[in-house]
Length: 383
Ligand SMILES: *Cc1c(COP(=O)(O)O)cnc(C)c1O
Image (tube, rainbow, N blue to C red; front, side):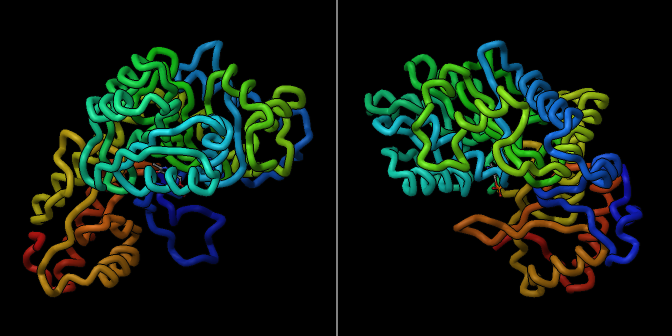
């Protein structure tokens, strides 16, 4: 792994920590270096690069000849909004499965769009079961589309994609999957699982920099979506149609983010693809959980439902624990972590994705131990 502070471009900057915050996350030197060149968006080399990114994403997702890949400028939410606007028919109804902030956000997007939707809300800790989704579908024949999140980054819980997809497909509805924080690390086979639409972004498990998201979807759904989007800039059909005809974005593409992503994809493939990436992240998780538990921390999730993407820890009840100071001191030692995003109990999160390995994780645990000593926290048990 590269040391973030070793980057030459940062000579005049403060030391940069490992970003244990998925994401943006820590990227490889080759990914950063790819951004030193200024590419012209209409040049033939750049257009070929855009097309190759689209093709390679389809391969990683095991999406067959019936699928297309559309890139969309913006953060992941822009791509989610584009997908919901393009694929939930104006006279259709979505079932939004919620077990954290990203499911809730999809519900808000549908509110903005004025599209009918039902909600299956499981709070922000529990895994969603296929059985519950099946029951919701059996109880409402009007539902056309099911939106759910692969790994809810709010807590790190991984939902059972295989089983949920099977339940949805058996009932003849469409699957719109937010695999933002899981794609590239957890196995996915769009063809085999019958996933109609999958959305992810550049700065998660492929380890690119922020700047665009991507929607992988069935071509016939794209074709049927012509004229449906409420938004010109988020119109997936229009973006796809233009990419097919010209290999170009309609509007200014994030050129540097795209060449960085192409470099990140090269490394992803060279390192062994989804299986190898998932295995590295799982080792990161194991080292982090072992170390934190040895210090007395309790995880929010059972290991059976928490994935290798992000780990949530209960905040210690010890009165000397002050999250603001804990965060600042850890950051000063080279590790940026995430505050909790849970509605009910105080917590914090440590990401296990990005260009980090077991050595980095051991370093993070040692830094946590040192900071606890500094703060005078002697008991890490939650309230
Ligand atoms: C990161 C993420 C998103 C998108 O968030 P942005 O801040 O818009 O990039 C959506 N869903 C999940 C599960 C995520 O982890």
